[in-house]
Structures are given as structure tokens and as C-alpha cells.
Image (cartoon, rainbow, N blue to C red):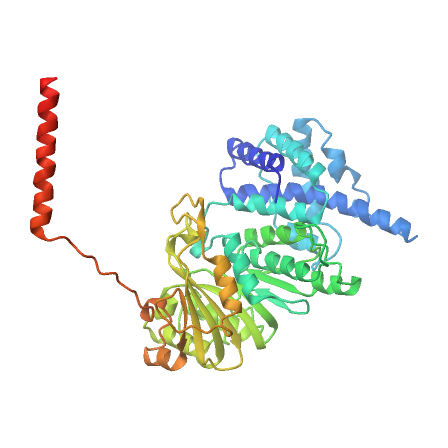
Length: 489
């Protein structure tokens, strides 16, 4: 969690970008990311140089022959000179950083555009970022800074893209429980929220008790394990170049130095991975469609609906025994097209569908009011029964303001899910219960909780008409008496 001073500085940075002419939140975050990246690049270069000296090894700086591209050099320039220098010298340098086609620098800065319009805005942004980094002493704070930046993102993208609420991501990760050694993928990664939350979860699981809350060191992992965690564990794909840049920066700010993030449409013929990942977490686009000629050859479901294709994709990506948690629109649960039914057959016959958590329609406001559910499934064995939970509140109001409230089903969902097989419940009047796969199949593979939940109605007893009539007459008489008294006074 960030302190009030840091939050205030980030809010000030947002205000400066807005008043400076950059009102698109995605564009603002992208430009902020570039500046943070420039600051971070020199900080990392200094650290590597110091380590090389300790090990008595030769070190070749990324700024060799380009000293004037260091943050510490150009941030001391006059305003007008600074803007010109960053636009015409620093940005071209960043695009040509050493490391080849596969380097993180090449991936991050490829096709990047510097669009900060005025010298005064650049100077203000540099000052605020410098002030922020005075307090940025650990990986937790760096990550929190970027998460807070992303939390200000209020604009939905094309094709139904929008940022998944952080608390929903954490719930899904907590239930799925990714572990060290798992290979984890988000095939529609957006800002990489699921990958970041999985990384933090694994670090917490590998931190000794007694380390201060909020700062998880992952001290149970040795150096080799850390390298595997950072370089061979997390994989993300997105077709939007801006989202790829933002997700790369998000992972880097959380301590993953070389993220495996690529710009790819995972539904297209240009992507053909299968049986590759132990864990898949995602909130794929709901409203998108793809040209039939572009759809990958591995798909058996005849549809252009991306929410259905992504479900089959996730099944294909999982290794046998692999686990998936995915957000879907309610229509996936009960749609009566052949494609809808085929996907549900896949989830029940070829997988163990562990849970369907129905979420209220306001969870994704202000982006959208669509009703959604979270599916949890394990590939490789048929379903015997499905656990349903009817979430009524996620801890926030369900209007556009999304203010925090006392009502929150999420802690109960996590606890009940983990104990669902110990304390089996079949009472359909409760928030959670099991339904046999036999009954689901008899209902055309319908997975909507409303199909099975029993609502207990309380009988309302009304007074007899003559009693109600007497009460009305008595009230009228009282009003007449009161009015007469007021006239007399």
C-alpha cells in the first residue's frame, strides 16, 4: 500500500498530463511508463556496474558513447532543451539499445512514440517521478506505484477490453493457488494483472514467517529458483501493442526483469501453442469477434465469438492436470447455440469443472454493467459435480462510483471453496451448493446458477381491509384536527 504522500504525487502527475493536453488515460499511462522506464534504466545500469566491480568483472554500460541519454544528465537541462533532447536523442537511442531482437528493451520500445507536447509538462513529470523514486526503496513500492497508476485507468478499450478489478484477480489467484514450478499463462493479458498477482502469491508462499507484512522477500527461494521464477514462469500475450508495453512495464516494476510478453492474437493462425502451461488465468474480451479465415486451425468450435474461442484455447493450452480460472459473460453459461453447448460439454466432459462463481452485474462498472461468472476447471478428468456460489457483493457498491462497503462475499468464497469437499452442501437455498453433472446434462448443460438456486419466499401477511380502512380514517381525522388547531392559533 502506498502512503498518502506518494498517492498525492501520482494524482498530481495525472492532473498535469490532463491539463497538459493528454486526456486519454491509456496514452497518459504509456507516456508515464516511458519516463519511469528511462529513470529505471539508469538505476539498473548503476546497480550492474557496482556488482561487476565487486566481482572484478568487466562491465559494458548500456549508455556507452551515449552518456547524455542518462536520466541524471538530461533532467538537468533547461525546459526547452530537455524536451528537444528527449524527443530527438533519448528516444531514438532507446529504440536501438543493445540486446538484439529478443531483448526486453527492443520489445518494450519498438514502435514507441514520445507524445508529451510541452516542455513544462515534461519538467513537471520529471520532478514528480524524481520525488516518487526517493521513497522507492524496494520492489513492493515500485510495484505499488505502477498499480496505483493503473487503478486510475477508467476507459474501456476496443472489443470489450477493460482492466479486471484487483480484488477479483486476487480472489481468483487465491483459489487457484499457483505454485513455484508452475508455468503460468494469460493469453489475453492486458495490463498483466493476473501474472503480477500470481508472482506475488508465489513469493508470499515462499517467505518465512516473521517478515513484516506487506514486504515479502521470498527468502525460501535460492538464486537458481529466483531465476526460474523471473524468467521461465510467467507468459502473457495480447494483440494490442499499447497493452503489451504497459504489461511489460508492470511486470518490470514488480521485479521481473525479463518478462515473457508478446504481441500476438492467440486466437489466430499465428499462434499454435498447446499442452504448454500448468496454470491459465484470464479475463478475455467479451464482445470481440474474429474473421473466420484468421481463426487458428486447432479450434473445433465453429464460432466467431471470442469468449467461446478463448475457452477452447485455454483448454488446449493446459497440460493434463493443468488448472484454469477465467471470467466469462453470463451468456456463455446458458447460450443455446451449438457453439455454446459444445464449449460447456468440453468443460464438463473433458475437464473437472470445479466451480462456477456468479458475480453481480456491477463488478465491472464503470466500464460495463454486464453480468459475469468465474469458472475454475482442471483439464483431464470428467466432472462429477459442480460447486456453485452466488456472490451478492464484492466489497464495493454496484453503481458507477464503486465505493467501498461492509458487505463482501469474497473472503467467504475463498474459505468455502477450499473446504467445499469437507463440508458438502446440497441445500439450494444457500449461497453455495453442489449440483450433480447428471442434472446439469439433463438441463442442456446449463451452468447458470439461477437454473438451480431455490429462492425461499417469505409469506407476507396483510391486515384485513376493514382494519386498513379504519387506520386511514383515523389518520385523516388527526390531520383535520391538527389543521383546525393551526387555524385557531
